[in-house]
Image 1: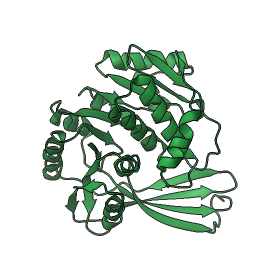
Image 2: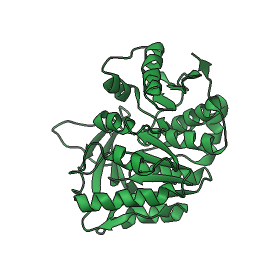
Image 3: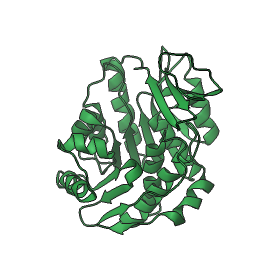
Image 4: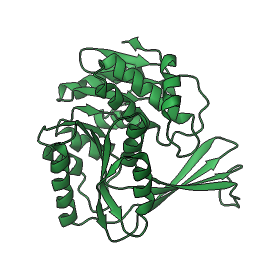
Length: 308
């Protein structure tokens, strides 16, 4: 089973306008609300790709049902800690003319030490019954920056751990030696403290992470493609030319593609191919919509991979 940990879920309100006017009037052409969060997305796409999944984390009494109902409808197990308060709202403004999204995100509810300790215990419980636990997304206010490290250590090696985080959350989380990390190029540059303009530069930086105890490092490079290494083999996939409608959720879909490959027992090449296909499929969907299995399978034959 895939268990995703979503500590700071959100309600994504996506509004579409003709062309964004800064400091002026913008008229909404359409809008929609979706219960989201990176961990929620991983749980939903895992079910779409026929994997058993659960989502644990924090949900709030005022509007958490928007997320719970979405997980329930997909057949994903929801076992979050329910708390007083409200799930934060993230506003995404889609500029139709320029095909750009502007995001305005709330921070979320503050956590207490007692609540965080309950989450540590919840992770220990799920580590026993999970094949992979995915730690991804932002942390709520008043949560220590090394909390992902604490949670990964709490699994005590009973399952594989995948970490998809940025900045100090990534740096600290890597100290617990998760099995798999998936930074984007910018996040990896922050991690190693230097620019990585070429695939070879990315390879060198990723190998440094492998040397620190990480088994697999995958790097999403936006319009420049993607990279993966396990220290023995390294692969690069150039970007597939597709119409880009939204990049929201693409990283979460890529992660789930990797998980699908792992669940099928594929080697590094095979799971990389699935991750690239899922991430590419995601950018062709509108707004916060996630991929379908059919779209994912349609993209698989289009992936090209080079050994580097």
